Structure formats: structure tokens, C-alpha cells
Image 1 (tube, helix red, strand yellow):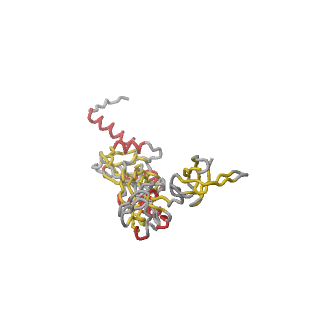
Image 2 (cartoon, rainbow, N blue to C red; image 1 turned 180 degrees about the vertical axis):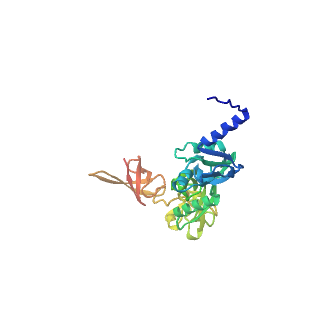
Image 3 (cartoon, rainbow, N blue to C red; image 1 turned 30 degrees about the vertical axis):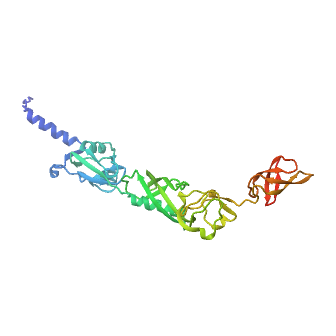
Length: 337
């Protein structure tokens, strides 16, 4: 038997090798402009979009492509993780090679799977937004809970750190309810929570004014003068600007005289007044000296004005010595050793 030697041209041999390679492959990869009808169809195809919008933190194949398959195969292909999503409202690009590489890692792929993809894919992350007005309304609600049924004003508010946020159930959460100091300054952190998870923290600062009725001078008041009901008037003032010793009611002035001069229109505070002295300088008083078993009563002369339950200096008229005693009433001082 003899064999006739066959002659092959290089071009024909190259075509033969390429055909055999395509037949042996499991997946057919094509560009988005490829002629789909020219590719052997198995009924399972993946067509990747050039642009798409996603909501999750990770991009799944089902988010960016149309998948032609049936049953659990389609579900499995749709759940292939292609990569991490961009930040909300940002755009991220992927190459066709990246998409195909993600698909190749799967073990369950059927034969003759066809993938059609552009060379570059652009993915944008969906977002939702929080405005400064939203944050202001939230802080205003918290302030109103603190100063319930009181006249207040959120005089200023600065908000820093607002960003676009992922889609989902969004709420604002105050880290601490103790956000207003004794001077009315607001300082707080507000957490942004989406679907129960903290995604950001805003810094908030500002100032609150709370208005209450306080007593103000209706005319100039001199030192040592006792204020009458017509000498004062009630006015609304921001209490955070006044201090802790502001006088709100006229009965707080009972048995008190002006310690320092007060000008008309000034608000009244307790440090501007002092109690009317029960004992005045130069008064002759009873001077009591006692212990557990002995009580001595002598006469003395007050060396200074004194109010109830306060220490003053007294000269003992019997001995001529200076002693200190507590004013008990307008004519009695008890010696303190």
C-alpha cells in the first residue's frame, strides 16, 4: 500500500487550527458589535451594558447585564460579583477583561456560554441626599424637646460633612442629647444611618437663645435704695446672656437694698443687691457669750453693719476688747470663739 503525500499551505493550516480551537472552547467572548447570529448559540447569553446605575456596595453581573438563561442558572450567573461599587453619586469604569475574568472564576458555567460586552463599562452608584434644611429641622426638634413650652430661638447653626449617601431607609441620630452648654452654645455630632447601619457623621455647632421674663430697672437706682414695685419692670431677655443670678420675681428683692448703682434698663441680678442690715454701725447691742453650762450677757457696740446670720465685729463695752459675733436679730449678737 502506498500513501500519497499531501501538501498543505500555511494559510489553510492556520485556519484549520483556529476552527478547532473555537470548537474546543467552553465560552464564546465577543465585542458588543459582534454579529451574534454568526456565533453558535446555546440559548445562554450574557449581554453587558455599556452604562448602568447600581445601588449595592458590590456590583453583581445581574446589575449590569441582560442574562438569557433558565432557572437556577440565571440566578447563579446574576449573583457573580464583578467588583466593588463606586461611592454614592460617583462613576467607576471596568474593562471587558475584568468582566470576563469574574465570569471565568465560576465552576458551574455551562458549555458554549456567549458573552457580549463593550471594551469599557461605566457604572454609577445611585445616591440620596441630606440637605442642611433637613439637619436644621432635626436639631430644632431636639432643642424643642429640651426647652419644652419655653420661648426659644435657634439663632445660628453650622453643619459640616454632608455627602451623598447610599439608597435605603435613611435616618438621623444624635450621638448625645447633652448638646447645649450653660451659655447656649450648641455642639453635637449627628450620625447618618442607612438601613440600620452608620454611614457618616456630621459635625453641628451653633447657638440657642431662650427668652424668659426677668426684672429690669425702670429708673436709675442708687446705692442703699430699696426698690419698689414701680421701680422695676418685667421684660423678655435671653437668659443665656444674663448669668445664673438673674432676678425673675419681685419677692426676691424683699428686705434688700441696692449694693451698687443700677441704670435704667439694666436687668437685675442678685449680686447688685444686699440684705437690709439688722444691725448698723454704732448700734448698742446685747452681746451673748455662752457655752454648755454658762451664759454671759453684756453690752457691746457694733463696729460695722450686719445682716442676719452674718459675722460682724463688736466692741465689748465691759472689757473694751473687739470680738466677732453672728447677728441673731436687730439687737443681739452671739460671740463666736
